[in-house]
Length: 398
Image 1 (spheres, rainbow, N blue to C red):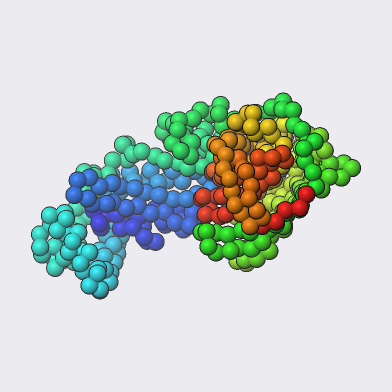
Image 2 (cartoon, rainbow, N blue to C red):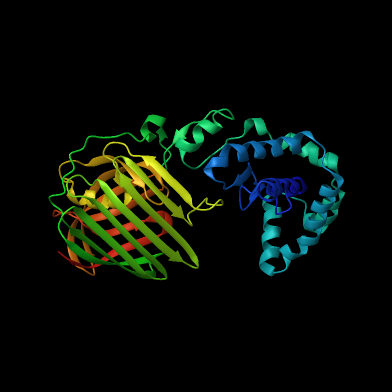
């Protein structure tokens, strides 16, 4: 099985890697692994691909699994795999810790005490018939559990013909497509509580490494509001958004970010319910900048405006909301849900605040916001668990 997996997906010479990366260019890497445990191990094959090629990549992966079960492996593939495993084995037992680990594993699995001494000889004896025999015994493409993590709106219909699809949210709860569908709403937005404000936040990752200071401002003008954000430090970021004075109607948006030599830019214009723009340097842009042309549903917000909508909501009266948004960094329409989870007294550099703790769910995952209980409910602290980012209020002027 070790030899078979090396051929299938055990490294950069494996069939999965050569197919999905080298030939198709759909991923940075595609791999497979078998685990051997005292009771029950597992087989897994994985690849990270763009939404547009999810079905194609899955089809190719399943074809490779079927091929190694049904067809004898080529002699050159077999010899290359064995040569690598035999030659690489000494590097896995170079240190006392490595040796102890291998001996412990052999004892745990009840293997013969000469297992490590004969390992390379046994690898060298493996034949093509052996590979096909163990694959037929232990790899069952018709019994796989397939897990696709991504935008169900984009990929579900594509993979429905391949296998029956069940939907789950980020916490593993069953969902339906109706819950994911972005629908227009008739919500009585009220911006009267908003006021001019300037704030400074400290942005950190992993609770210790400071990325920089983020300055934000909100200003009411004759035609609406203008919100500006600037982050300076290890990452530089600048965002400017304008929205209507009565209903948060999107008016204009620009964004620019630079980090570790990489740039991302986004720019939008709005005319009626139509949003048009470009995104440069974002993920999945192998073919250049992404053009955005989206018809907005009723009540749609810019994702950059969600915190200002929260500032106006009667959070003490209603505990959950759901709004349609245009995600400015992807150009896609998505839902954002806001749930009040409790109240907390919070001490931050800007002072002590009575806050509401909110859970925010979007297509990208979840985050936690702590907003001041007093209206307007401006953000005191923001936590993004998936990125281990924490944003904390340093000072505020209203």
